[in-house]
Picture (tube, rainbow over the protein chains, first blue to last red):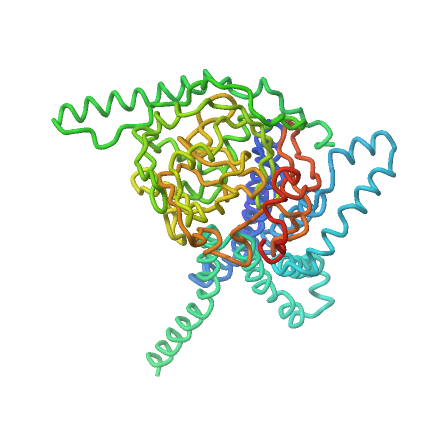
Length: 231
Length: 320
């Protein structure tokens, strides 16, 4: 595939990835975030983090299916950064809404130049978040997954890769598997016992992870066969 | 600034009840007509009658308890954001799927340790005592809350009618579990069961509930009859009840069986006893605002004056 086609495709993929963002903005503007928008936003941003993460993990196994799909790799960074984007929104939803922080009130106070109210509200909700991080394992794994995604995002530019050296960069970026697993664990630990909502994401992740050893094994077998045929 | 521009949720935004119901009647009425024609053609008894009995107005008397001062949650929110796992685990699922629930004919079996075991019809139960308006705080274990005007009469009236034997110490509620009307997702041991201690069930605040907002309950709210126990987390208030049983032993209850470390048998609203996964000190109050405000949770959901004495001498952190 030519560089030009890939550049055009990249723009199209980027625009497609904007659709869910537009969807949420539209839901907000038309008052369609449901009875509990905090809950809706938390779930939607969490879902899209996982979807983008799974999409970025799908690149390698898809690429291995055929040498003609090698160009897919050029989309992986973008998908990973979209996962980071959604994870950041997810974290912000937690910090600025789920925590109990009065975000609309903060905007009103900001317009009135009343910073005192904002600080007071922040001080009131801060202990809840500290307690969450200290005590609640689903929060802990979620935070850890975010730290991983953050470190991958800041090391994603080409010049950082060159500076770090390919080998150590790759080692660091393999922690993305850890982030994906932690994300799914975060989901399972969040839902009530018996609720199987995270099952679909779990199955897809399992396929992504198993596809790697599977394709490797297949390629090795093909290589041996070719060698034998040549001999 | 996106957030600042948000329009307030206006009551005029809610689909008027008549319109909503007409639409539903039209759909279900049409379906029913088509179904009847089809079944008649096949000369077979209809297998499935859609729920044409959409909610209707109830005649009520003012309740015994003063209404809460907080703003009532809009009906549109209270009937679109429900936990009714029989219809699916997402909070939008009950509204989407509960149309299949047939609320007539409906009977409630009263059994166990009582002198008057009986199967009662929903319509005679509805007329048994005057229906009261009771506006209660409703606190979900997931740390959100609503203010809902319920319609019903004290559960104590039905219990007195059943005339429990002296050895009866608990009341067990069984909800409908019918695969032809419900999704009944895997992972749970259906039917849903809940229970109360006899003195809790006899408390005047415990309401045998037939309606909300002056109308019969929407299916997704647990039609045609449920209990509302306002000082406990919402899951204690069993929906779509088909059986009430009196027992001498603490009954097994669905959530307590699923995760006893998270959901105790008592499950009184208690801001000092945290759920393992989140704090119970606060709640998001779902009202008319776009983004619900987080407010402090009150012990016994604010009904401490009325019910705290039921638990005198009990360690509420042990019996959470």
